[in-house]
Length: 301
Image (tube, rainbow, N blue to C red; front, side, top):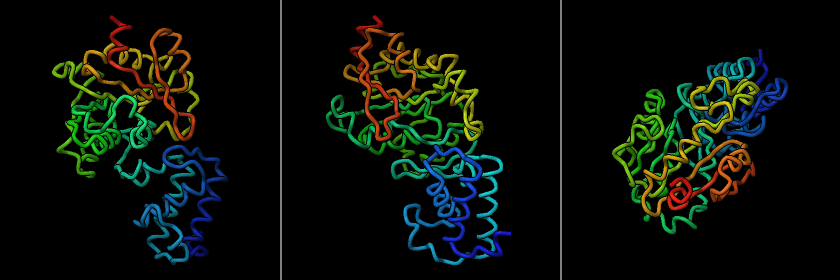
């Protein structure tokens, strides 16, 4: 048994990295490699600061700590459960979020774009956003970041799933945002009829995985709710509806920010004259566009 020969955090880090590599795990739910995944598992399991591993590497572990770590390593490699579902915790741009299998794991590129001030060409100052909407909020992580960054805004966070909204409520309370964000059950815009022309900013990371890609997803993704992933045969069904309806809910100078899959060119073929502005992300593989209410009105009216 590993517990009899492994004693320090350093020992278990090495063991976990070896196991993760041996089993060819997929990384993409908060980390990108075996070492970072192993470090995250250890730090979360031991309730240590998530960004400080080195000071604790030579600390000896108690027997119950060893057993819990080994149990979680086994879950990760034998069942391919994403780490945030094992620890019930995920991180995004400095915030901690509770997650379980009712919701998709936080990983939106829109959060990166917001905190890096990439919306400044459309929104000069954060205080100019008085009302914002996080459509398809899921776990509530993006709504939390929107409420924090656009500190004067009233934020609405909507989702079709009552289970997702229950998790979002936990995360708003955890991050002290309950007074700034209203949760609303809604199938896209269908339940938002009382907000015509309201939102200076709408952000959305809707389901956008197409049928072909759904069938080839890594095993880790199979634990996430299909409702939060599948975007129809071409992955664009929900994006299409959002584009057509968003103008009715944006304020005069409002903007829509949408994260989608890698079918950018299919979307541009669908709407050849719609002036999408595509935003860069650090990894280079985020597909996020911005478009104004004025441009949406010109195209669809």
